[in-house]
Each structure stands twice: as structure tokens, then as C-alpha cells.
Image: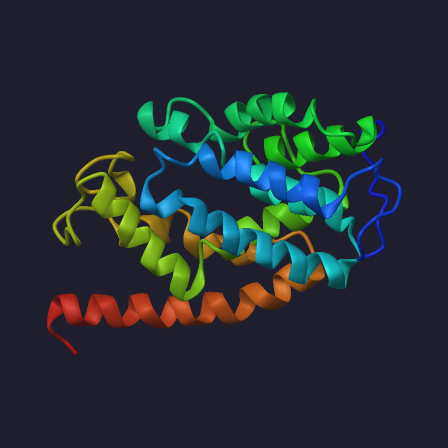
Amino acid sequence: MDDLNHTGHGTDSESQGSVTAELVASMKNQARRLFFEAAGSHDWDHTRRVAALCERIGRVEKADLTVLRMAAYLHDIGRCHQDRSSGAQCHAQAGAHLAAAILAKIPLLDSAKRNIIHCIRSHRFRENHAPETLEAKVLFDADKLDAIGAVGVARAYLFAGEVGARLHNAAIDVTTAPAYSENDTGYREYLVKLRHIHSRMLTAEGRRLAAERHAFMVDFFDRFLGEIDGRI
């Protein structure tokens, strides 16, 4: 992808124009205000966790941390649009559009702005928007890591509660249940999406972190089904 190569070396880049810590903090506050309608499963707390994981993975992978921080804070600002449309509108696309307006006011190199927007647009990895830069791959991994492990299980059930789903329906194949329905359960989320995430990670550090979280999640759902059936 043209002009999307990362410029950092696992530290704060010095080639990003006149970006200061104060400007990053200001942008962070702008992003936070866009979460006033956010559901708990994709709220500002999720963004903070993803940002922390971006820092952790980004330093190991030697990514541009300035780009990563901004992309992490902005990556889910379009989520409320997807929730209001019951999944019909892609929050990554909406977020990329909103982020472009915010970034227009920040003295950042155009190449860095394009990279940030690419990170946001590709973090969901739908259609033809695959992460192509190192920073986009780090954000993708950080976002997916927050969907698995103990936090991932908790978020799956939090989301199920948000859409009014039941705890579990043993009478049906939940993988055939439609999203945003009463059978869009935490276990369905695991079967359809969460159990596959560890094999889709894009960075070495992301894969390392995902392995342990995946193992915990497998053990949890094995026990969950045992308790549901009364075997445990």
C-alpha cells in the first residue's frame, strides 16, 4: 500500500511532524467523548485495554508508537453506528471516516494520517480491508486479544446481555442462530468467532499472548457446558 510504511522503531517517532504529548492527549479526549452512547462491551474501557496492548506489542514488534496510540484511541469511535444498525453498518468504516475529520486538525505527516486511518479501517478485517502495515497488524492483534481470554469471555456475556440473549440454549445448534437475537449467546460467540482468533494473529508477540488466553477460554467453555448439563 502506497505511503503506509511504518516509521517508528518501537519508540515515540520523531518523524511525525510537531505532535506533542499534549496533542495526543487532546485527541484522546475527543475520541473519548464519542463513546457517550457506547454499550459496555465496546466502551472506552475496551479502548483503554486495546491501547495498553498496542503499547506492549508495539514495543516488541518495533512499531511506530505515535501512530499506534492514535489508532488505538480512535479505532472504535464508529461502534455506536454499528450497534444502532444491529450490525448492518460496519463500525470500522464509520470510524475511519470520523477519524479523518479529527486527524485533519492535527499537525501530523500525511503518511502517518493515512496509516492511522488504514489501521482503523482494517482492524475489523472484513471484506478487502486487510491490515497491511505493521501498525495495522499490531492494532488488529491487540483488538482481538481483548476478545479472548478471561476478558473476552466476560465481554461475550456482556454483549449477550446487551442484545437480550439467554444464557444458553441446549435445544438448538447455536451456530445457526442469527446475530443480535435471543440466541446470540456467549457460547455462540465462542463457537462462531472467539475460538478461531488465536490462529488469525498477525504478529509474533500477538500469537504468543493469544496462546495462553485461548487455552483459558477453552477450559472455561468446557466447564461451562459441564455445569449446564449437570455433569460438573
